[in-house]
View 1 (cartoon, rainbow, N blue to C red):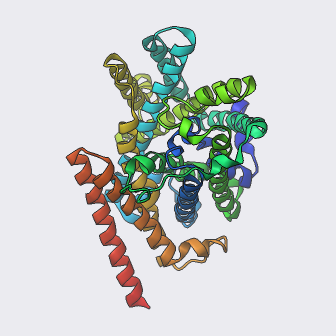
View 2 (view 1 turned 135 degrees about the vertical axis):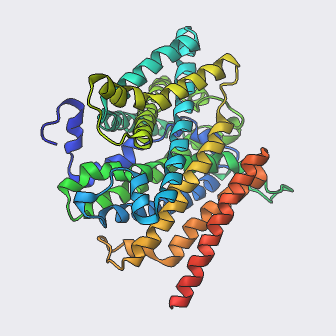
View 3 (view 1 turned 120 degrees about the horizontal axis):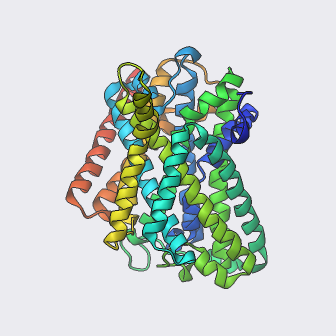
Length: 453
């Protein structure tokens, strides 16, 4: 670590703060630019309640993955989530996990590319196709460098966090507390389930917490300087909590500055409306944030996809020739990003660069498996080892109730989207099928626990 230079020096942070930074900065989502828009139909208070629930569930997932990591001896510790799952749950579930993670990051990468090129085209007058070519080349160069995506993401995340805090402070003179009282709830005012009120925000909230997916990579940087893992675990958990608190502040203050009804149906970013209601500083800082957050997410998603494709296609022996090494280190990791770039080019050509449905299906399916269902299964195996947790507070998340409620939450989400939100029969069958399989696992776990007692 001491030999690293430049941006990689940020990886020399103390263990607690490095683990915290991976959860709070590297995983800082691009959704901030549109989060208040998706929250607007529900209103601030119901949206905050959803964030509290999702944050709590993600703490269970985070502690499950973290404990699974530290329970393995350092010399044989996996370096990615797929291999970790293989150790505890077998190769089949490991493969499913890898596919789910790939779906999440591919969906994020496509959304980021669309956001960046459309914004650049709007401000410069150059075509989206030209900007896609430029941005695509930058992405391919960055991921060819290798591990720089983590250090660069940390720096970019820190810059984005500073902008978010500056905007929150600048919003104070424009706050109207009465806006917080606006709310629209399902099954009220002659509404039914009203998925148009909650489905967008619930999906974005779950997609925003990808920190658990970065726990295994972060361990390779944190644990060498923290062998007992206490700071790795506590730093990661506080990073997830910090992200949830920041989301709550962001939604609350933005919705107190602009009446939520004015954001309903708005396309693009919240700053289009926020700039009209506030001042020039917020408009400028918001524009900078629009570029930084999708840029950060692009680097993160492209880097993770490159690692996953190398894992899936890894040869039986190390490449020897210069050409083979170039293919393995540069060409292979670029394949998913090239696929995303080509897909975005097709969407632009067909004037269909609205990827909200694509994100909803790909993201919810992938996130429900990778950050919900699989971590609950991991915790069951960690429990079976009968080892005491490194941090006492983890007893809260290790309880059977916490594990089962976490898993049931994601089954419920999959059922809701499969029945009420999505209208493609194959996708509906897939979502409900995953939910049923998970419910069977929950039921078996519940029966086994009751029998043991």
